[in-house]
Image (cartoon, rainbow, N blue to C red; front, side, top):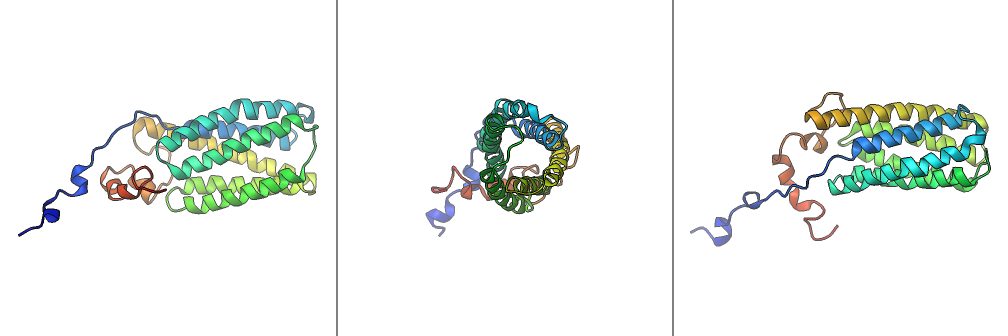
Length: 228
């Protein structure tokens, strides 16, 4: 005779999907990131005059920061923990760097900022390594960001101005890559399929293949399990 436990319906048969009508915040986050990197890159390369440093800072914390913050909130609501964490770190960074650019004398450097950039680069490198499991495009973007932060940080702690200019080149490349990513994500969301490749794999790719694979790991997701 089958036990009561054996006869009970499987959890997959009892699942109810509650949809929350939200849009993806990633295209917004990528576009804002690209514009912010364009400002940093042009500033480092001297294409924006040093006398306009305060203007750069103003746009970083009044334009880039709030848009990145909005993208971060929606990424967490969409349960994309890795993407939301990455966006959240950059969100606070745009505010901090923007405030520094706004309040510091034009052309000044700071050992504190340099050490901060080294620490942020370490966190970004770890996020890049984690992204290789599902989102290699994010890995490439983060590795470029790491290079930019290390070069800019080295300039801040006493390196020659040439290192700062090289970091500006990386920032311009980051801006172009982020714009591509934003366009790819936006078109993908509209068409519900890959148009411009982002090279997803693993769980990130399975998320576009239907509910089956996602339901198998539902019990271990934040908001379902008892502890984070």
